[in-house]
Structure formats: C-alpha cells, structure tokens
Length: 158
Image (cartoon, rainbow, N blue to C red; front, side, top):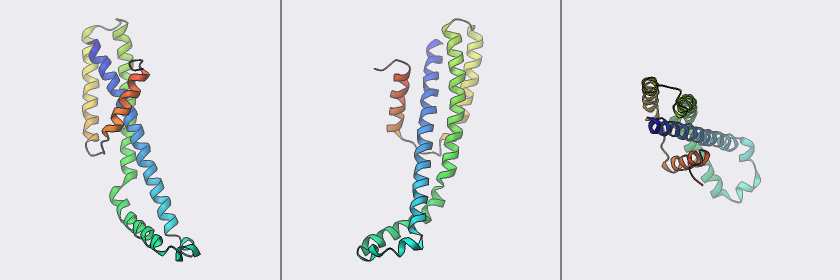
C-alpha cells in the first residue's frame, strides 16, 4: 500500500510538471507565430527598402506567413494551452491529495481501509483526467526530463 501511494504521488508530480512545461511551450509557439504574422502583414515591413535587395527572402517569408495564417486556426494552440493548463491544475490537486495521503501512510495515521478508499477515489480522478490527455501532444523526451526532475526533487536521483 505504501509503495502504491508513493509511486502514485510521484506520477502526479511528474504529470503536473509535464503539463506545465507543455502548456508554456505551446503558449510561446502561439505567441511567436502571432508576432511573426503581425510583423509580416504590416505594410510598413513591406515598404522597407532592403527587401528589394533580398527579394527571395521576402517571398519565402511571405509564403510562410500565408501558410501560418491558414494553419493557426486549425492548430488552435490557445485551446490546446487552455486544456493543458486545466490538466496541470487537476494534477496539482491530485498531487497535493497524494502528498497528504503519503504523510498519513508514512506516519501510520491512517488505517488501511481508509487509505484504500482514498486511493480508489484518486485513481478514479486520474482515469477521468487521462481521457482529456488523449487528444493532446505527447513528448517522451519531456516526460523523461520531468521524471528526472521529480526524482531529484524527492532525493532519489543525484
């Protein structure tokens, strides 16, 4: 029982970190894409004299901005970021619940039946959250980074 609570607490910590980083990444992508579009669609930029000297670059950047203008509504990064932030908040709450449960288990405050009931409730919350994760991007490299951060923060990795 102790190991299950401990491992679940670490998983919740990992998920909270993962969704925090992923939300920031996609928020930044959306922000920079919109800044790029705003700059490229400005008439002032088109009138800059140096574009006539590097006309091919202007054409390439114009094509990229046109494609980006088409792709951004389809990618819908703001909605994705909103979902990621929601997941981060839910994982934070679950992590907090596991940390409280862990302290009770570690200190022997809680009886086994109560721990099982609480564990079951938390696992049900996790299952509901997992359904929301299905349509979002997956980054295994970031997961590994978060796993290492969790282990370091808990003193399990030097």
